[in-house]
Length: 630
Image (tube, rainbow, N blue to C red; front, side, top):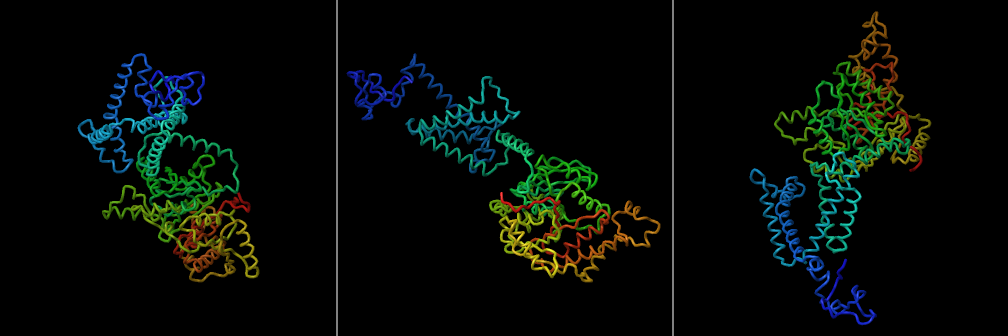
């Protein structure tokens, strides 16, 4: 503040008279005229030219010299002692490639000898330049950048209110830390703007690489605390937002069990919830054993590696229905709460204990009682691949530590995620990961459920691998008004802005099913029939309490028409949808007086004989589609 930028050092260079005309520089206002040396750039004194300025204006010149020596020695020792240790830790974290060689330590103190040698070579290289001013600009900017990051780290840790941020220094304010960070940036550009740009480019490159590679290291950074604060704040603010049909999202609770054992279920739901809505994988544990934290962590890691955006929650319960009821009531947080339950189809229902069938059907009842939507996915080869995983282990295959979580499918339909999934060697591709080409998605919209049956296929076709698929909608109608029904439905779907390629009116659903198909249905329920001669002296109420899954002759006859309709609908589905990519069928509404085994047979009949995934789906009568744009 008391030294001009350029000076000649000649005391005779003073202004004559009171005029400053033709004089260049701030020194003119003080009576000095250094114009000649400024214009010829031959000034030897001043801030821009002399390295002795600090000593010249100090009270004791040699004290400054001693201070410079002390500061240089301190920096040198810090560079040769602290820097190698920090660099060794950086290498051990494996954050950046090609530097892991320097992570090796020697001796009981794990001394970083390789890093010492590297630092020594760097120091010697700069010394051999023999011109400090050549590198001073870049070095000064790196130091200022370091000060900036330290100050900003303190500020960011303070504003996130993390309980772990307890600074030991007394005189501290988060605003002074922010001021220090800003001042450091300003000084970087005031000193040497090009060096500041180079420094920022290097820092941004290093930071961007860490963000891209996502190393599996947890430093407990303030960014995590900030993310938590933002998530908490937004979740609370959502509770004050009123639901609107335009913002409806299918938020799914998926009863997967361990997700790695039913990947088809995971991938199917991920295909229409990814980057759109909430997904929770629920695991109901019935054996009463406590699940180790390592198991939970491995399942979460499997979901992350599969790039499935889902939460995982395990719950202990006495039976399947009790666990499902608890999850239906307690899952979610505020408005981030599931509104759709997704189940896998119970393929082995004929061989299962009757109580388990009753639990399964009762869970469907509970779903609608809690005002949830419902989806049931059926795969041709079943959903559970736990036996396949056990076979691989028993045969001596050594899957990756995360492969226990892999399954038939991988869900990802966003372009970048798709590409990364294809390159993952320990993930098994499934039908929901394959490119579906120009196949069709067939929707059998038998009853109006609020529109969920139509919304789900639309969301699926937004994914890259399903984008070329065409959606066909099948509706029930009579032959006389077939064309009118077709045009009305097509007009309605277009008003909903749903991309449907065709609407097909089923006029023959009331026809009697083929005798072979009907005989197959009768055989499937035969083990659960209770004929009149078997229930002598037992009332229907007593029978319902003791064996609610049993089907009496009276009940079988009462539901005969509905049973035949399900069989006939299956014949139509098999006729029209053998080569499709996906079939969605309106789920029949369960009735309280319908035996569970009979209702289970209906679900089985509707989806049997198909070579593609089949989904039984039903909304909760809440409208999820609107004519109006956002």
